[in-house]
Amino acid sequence: MQSPVSFRFLFRSRGAVCAALLCLALLLFSACASAQGRGLASGPAGDLTKHIDPSAWKLSPQAEHLYYYLVLASAMADNDQETIAIALKALLRLDPSLEVYQDSATIMLSRGTFADAQKTALAGLDKFPGDSLLTLLLSAAYSETGQTAKAIELLEKHLAGNATDKEAIQELIRLYIDSGQEAKASALFLRLPETDMSVEAELFRAGVLGTVGRNAEALAILNKLLKNNPDDAELWLELAYLHERENKPEEAIAAYRKAAEILPGNIELQFRLVTLYLDVGEYAKALATARDGRKRSPEQKEFWGLEAFALIKQEKLKDAEAVMRESLKQHPDDPDLLFGLGSILDEAGKKDEAMQIMERILTISPNHYQALNYVGYTLADASKDLDRALTLITAAFDQRPDADYIVDSLAWVQYRLGHFDQAWENITRCIALGGDDPIIWDHYGDIALALGKKDEAIKGWSEAIARKPDNLKAIQKKLDALK
Image (cartoon, rainbow, N blue to C red; front, side, top):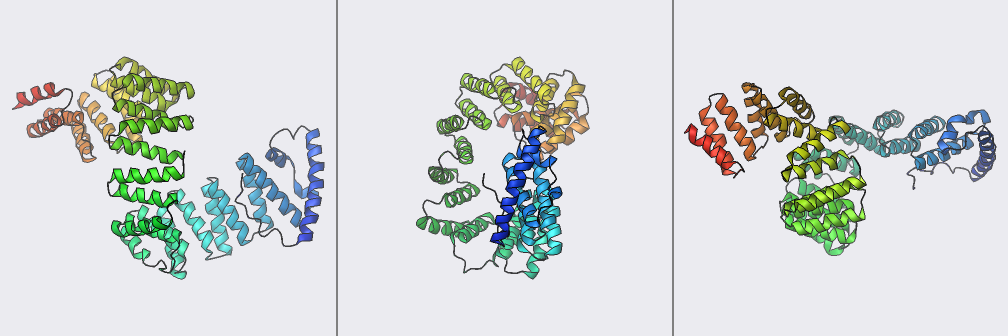
């Protein structure tokens, strides 16, 4: 494993390092022999570190410094978070230099310990105010912990005194775009140096231009870059993103396929291609790509689901069921794969078996919001155990309050319970969220009628019929009776 740790400031004196290495080798040999005699050397190197106090060895600062770097490298290889934290704390104590603060915050970010990275970057900026890298690291720590406003404020303040810091400008542009402040992103974009014509700089420009809607300019830059760099996968990916934003799936697929030729077997690319093939109705290609991805990476359970979905789209429910059952041999009791199997059984009309699968999911993963919603809605639709149905759907709603189909479930169970005002509030919110399924419109009509809103009931059932539901005759009968 390649470590991101920098050793640039260790080798200030060749003689000191050689002496430290010799001393450290002897001390470690002695310590390991002693530890083995006490039964401590059988585990990872990090276990040994926790039982040895190098300060008792009276090492020189250089030797202790080197010792903790070796401990850090070993702990990172073992993914031993506790020992990594011990080593970084010791290194900051021994050498609180700019480089150590930078390296420590970088490692903490890469290991996902964002709170520690934030604390370290702040401490570093107290000692070295205005340092660009520490500012960017602190901004990243803020972003990762959902403190986007703080990250933006930090970079804006930094750029007020460092107006030409290209990396900070680029990061702030990204944050503006991610937070929906496209006008600010466009204005800041003009501060990027026009003289930087590197592929990296031009690629960034194209990405920003495409994101803020200046698609023609972005496309011109990408086409120019690709003419001279046809084997650059990043350029093809950016072109694919641009075409997706323009709602041109065919062109996006072509660009993704070019990238896939350069990066064969790339999992993310295969996922994206399968999804786009499904979107444009090329189900055979979606199936072939998903199956290839599953064979290459059987541990990626998403490929099993995509393969099954492509089979469903080709009306091959038995084959889809077989794929999901096979996936569960590879990933026993996986809640998401079980949900996929249950959904296929439901689609195939095997309602009782589907319900059994969904109940099983809730014994394995009680907070699985999709299973909570499925079981709750099924009970509500059958007017069975309505109190439990409400409890289950509410638990799903608490996790996904803006999922239109879950809001519809909540409205429906409230309707079944006779809570018509609450049901109306939620069914109208469901429609506002984009709910457009004929079942949702059918519920809209039923709830409206319960409240005496005849015009709204007519509207709901008319919208449902326009979407050609399976129960069209039943809805038409209700509509005719009302008219």
